[in-house]
Image 1 (tube, helix red, strand yellow):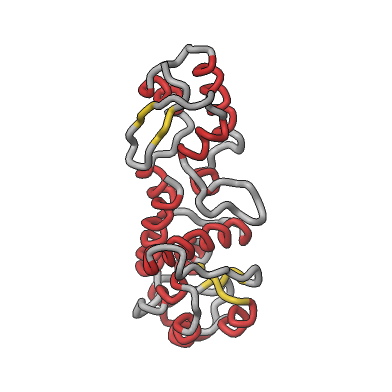
Image 2 (image 1 turned 120 degrees about the horizontal axis):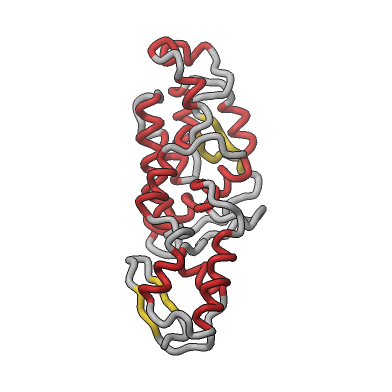
Length: 232
C-alpha cells in the first residue's frame, strides 16, 4: 500500500507514507513548472506538445482516486495509468526542436523560463538571478519583413523567411526600446545589440557567425536542451 507516489526527475519511483495524495501534487512531480507563467497557467509541455488543456489534471485526479480507493498500490501501476498523458523527455525535446508559430505571450513565457535556468547554471544558485522586467518583448532575429541587409541570406535560401521566421530558434527577448532599435537590421548590426543585453540567452545569439536556417536549428536545439531540464 502507498499513500503517495513520488516521481523523481531521473524516472525512479518510490513510495513513502504521507497524507493521501492530491492531484496537484502528482502534476507538479510529473513535470513541474519551476518558473510558473505570470500571464497564464498553461504548462510548457502543453504549449510545446499540443496536449489538451486539463489532461494532466484529469489524469492525476483519476489516479489519486484510484490510490485513495486502494485500487493502485504499486508505482509501476501508477506509471502505466499516467503513460498516456506524461510527456517523456525525448518526446518533449523533439517537439521543442521543431516548434514554431507560438503566440508572443507563450514564446515570451518559454524564453523567460529558459533565461532563469541559464542564470542558475552560470551562477549556480539564486545569487545571479535576474528579476526580469515585464517590459521585455519578443525579438525576431530574422525579421518578419526582412530589410535589404538580409538579401544575401534570402538569396541563398529562398524559403528561409517563410519557413524559419516563426520558429522558436529565431526569437529572443529584448527590452522594448532595444527591440525597436534592432528592427529590420541585418544580423551583424543586431549582434552588437544582443552582446549588450544582460540576458544570457539573448547574448548567446551573438556568438553565432551568421544567421540562416542551419543556425536557427542549432539555436533551437540549444533552447531545447535547457527547456527539458526545466520541465521534466
